[in-house]
Amino acid sequence: MYPEEFLYTQDHEWIRVDGNTASVGITDHAQKELGDIVFVELPQVGAHLTAKESFGTVESVKAVADIYSPVTGEVIAVNPKIQNAPELVNSDPHGEGWLIQLELKDRSETDRLMSAEEYEAYLKGGAAH
Image (cartoon, rainbow, N blue to C red):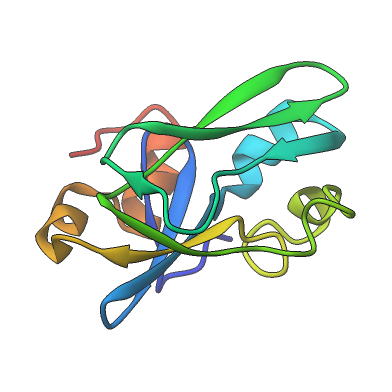
């Protein structure tokens, strides 16, 4: 269910690392919990984020939730489609619904994130690292 090439956080964000850059979004589980997403607030390109720091919010008809950066880095892109079509986060959370791209400061930070298998176990109440 969850893409094997991604890594995951306990706060239900995903990250896909490609060299020194990474795309970040929220997981399918998170979007289902939130319900219909109506607005997404994201940082500006050039913003510096610290791992576990809130970088924006996702607003649904049910709630507003913070989004946390899985790693430390600089925002190099913000998904231009999200402002006009926040529902992409619901319909394709692991694809077209990506939120930001980061230039990684320290790739070793990804070592503390969960694999798809670990994340699925976490969702079921199993052990995660």
